[in-house]
Amino acid sequence: MIQMSNEWITLTIGKQKNIALIAHDGKKKELLEWCEWNKKVLQRHFLCGTGTTAAMITARTGLPVRAYNSGPLGGDQQIGAKIVEGAIDFVVFFSDPLSAQPHDPDVKALLRIAGVYDIPIATNRATADFIITSPLMTQEYEHQVINFSQAIRERSETL
Image (cartoon, rainbow, N blue to C red; front, side, top):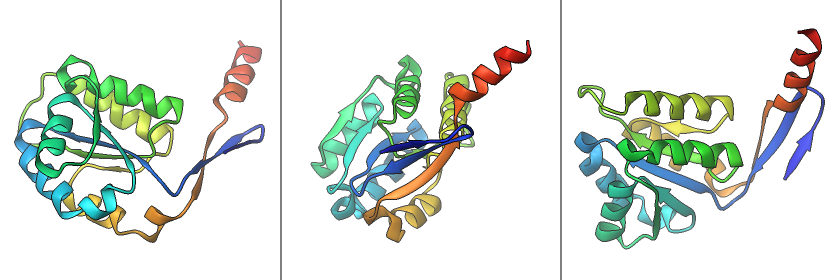
């Protein structure tokens, strides 16, 4: 559900969340263990992820995970686009801070768009644990984002 004012748009995240699952190569094992540990919670939600990670989660846990492209082949950007469309409510992205990533600009763009659209994003296990055990995981949640259409109209009038 979407409510609008001139300044803000109120978005509602439903009880059943759309969760993106992503991990850099050095963190895939950790994400797989986390998914296995949280399988009972995750099976109540819609899951998607970048290519290799999605396939590995499904193989290990049996959870259905819709696969996008691999991160270096545009998967992070696909997930970012789904956030813009309102099709992703929560991102679990176990990033590897100790390894250089060839698609680092894509990762930064994904983190930025999650911030712009006020989407919870866990970049490590501790944060993911806090979010997945939150009472908000079983409730609707309303959050506000800037009314970009209004902001663009106002900006164009001042140019």
